Amino acid sequence: MTAAEGGDIFTPHKPTGTPMSDLNHEKLEFTVSRELHDDEWDDFLSARPTGQFQQSSLWAQVKASESWECSRLLVRRGGVLLGGAQMLFRAARFGRIGYVSKGPVLAAGEESLFRSILEELRSLGRSLGLKAWILQPPDESTWQEPMLARSGYFPAYLMRVINATLVIDLARSWDDLLGNVNRSTRQRAKQAERKGILIKEGGEADIGLFFRLMLETCRSQRTRPNPGSIQALTELWRAFSPAGRARLTFAEKDGVPLAGLLCICFGSRATLWKKGWDRASGAMHPNEALHVEAIRWAWEHGFQYCDFVALDPGIAEAMLAGRPLDAKQKRSRHLFNVKMGAAPKLLPPAVIYISDPVVRTIHRVVGRVPLLTALLRKATMGFGRS
Image (cartoon, rainbow, N blue to C red):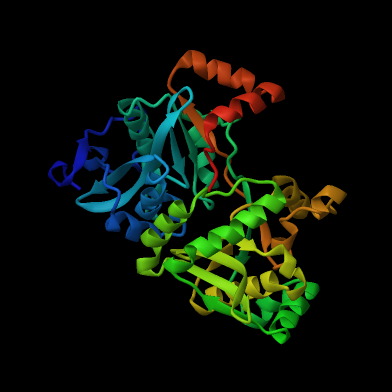
């Protein structure tokens, strides 16, 4: 994008000690776009293993309904898009704070540009007047951690950012995938079918129904719904569904919806993003039927992964180490997803860049005091929740 098309052209900074592998840095063109809609960026992300919906302009459109603004840093060579990072930002209690979720994203073979992008992000953050910004790399990009530390980022102690998830690798036969589902879960899905549970797809007119099911589930789990309104869910549907990137399904009995599931389908990943159900219908096993069907649908449509979005990190660490779960972990709501045959995955940790050196020092100290950390988290306004 050129300045005439609504973007700002950045003059890239020449990093000291830039390796020769960072080819012709002087010929790179950095631009900043503030457009909410950007098909080129979304298509670039969709074609990359590290491209996730949280970096898409579609997601920026959704978050705009919650007062987030967007600036998208893009880098090209010879007019060819090589990568970039989308930063969302808004006012928090202590000033403007930004968030780069699942970014930056680079084309294959262009990893040497990461350092330059971090420098341009620093310039962008300052031009936006950000007090700080949180950055969490894509799920498959753990190689970025050392460079982030050398560039002035450090652990985001105060932010509740998802740092573990459950993933199903769909590159297997359906019989193998189904066989990996917990035996009792498979039996319950079969029982739901025998009891007349049907899976039906929904549309925009059903968003209110789905939100009510989601709200009921949140109340039973003593959590707040996120998104917190029908309007926000509707915005997501309108952004993602036209290109087939959202799917809403319900498990019904005699035409009465008992459970719902909203999936975001982006790139190689089908994310089982939000769900809700009528607790009174538990004996009908609508959730088991709904999730088994969603996994099969993702497999049939050629997705590489099913992502369950989040997992308690303690459970993830125990499973990866082969340790038995303790009594509290066995009661966790995440065990339902574990029984679907999903494998735990620890995500790259979120880091933060703080502009003011004094505040940076305070953050380092506070992050080591649990009580102060808990109090100051209230000022972050839900950063990291998705």
